[in-house]
Image 1 (tube, each protein chain N blue to C red):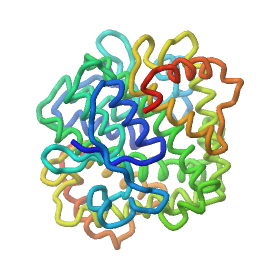
Image 2: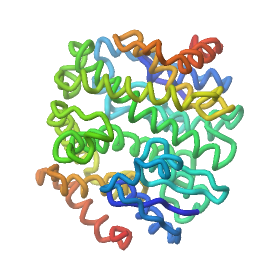
Image 3: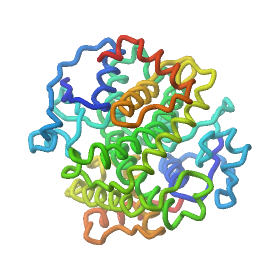
Image 4: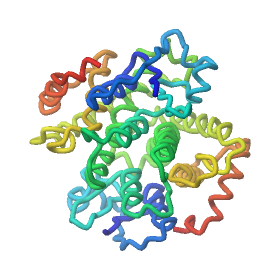
Length: 203
Length: 203
């Protein structure tokens, strides 16, 4: 396997997942600032022109962070980061999709359509007028997550999972691009400190 | 198991998935037009206040359509609608996430913030100024999917999967809410006819 890697929260999620699994996977850097990911060589690997992309041992390519993590979990079940039973996996997938759709995606497009406009306007459709609203949706759902995390060690209760990694990386990214976590979200802030203390956070 | 069901593309996806599996799962209707899904009784099942929600045999509740379908696939592997191998499942999950994030979600919010505003404005944050842009993103990604489907029977090549069900249901929903498929997408239109001919489309 080989990971086509770059800066940004999505590749970081996969690197953290790999670190939590204790795996070593060779990487090849793709310079997304220079638009290398939109050039034919990378588009042949990922027709969406995004990173990360995982090259499998049969030479095929796999994209989309949650699909990559699910694949790595199936190939290397221990330690479980999605779940050991159908019920555990279901709970993790439920929270992962909620976080993905209602926090990560509006936060990302809120960034692409405003602070990130110069980098993204020639790559994807950008609508600056939508940015403030999308940012408010992400902030609103973070506030909701704060209530949902009350009394829980991790997103899935006592299990550390992919859902924690996804939420953690995007909260970190938000702080870098003008969407910092509202300090009123004290439950989330405490949880964030716990995840930041894990060695994988340096990946 | 029991499915808390309603009108709308998300419950329909799960009903079609259940029909393709040949399963029979009792349902209980939730009247989302009357806001029954936002009342305490349903929020206790699903804190996001959405449908569908699956009640498991242990009395716990599972939400989010892709998590529900993954759970049903694990409990009832035949016929496979996600995949029979890690590689097949990975391919299906990759396409499902692409469709979910770049077509279904902007199409849904494009609707909620415009034609659907009256129903949604007191339930979720709504930003009417974002609607035209979000609709254009969904339309742009449908056009992209049209190029990606060239020469393929289904989204994952010769395998009929969850990715087809997800895309099909949202194209149908778009047509009902002022976001019809551009007839220039002839490859998608032909594929749509093939899915519509399946008995599960009536579910």
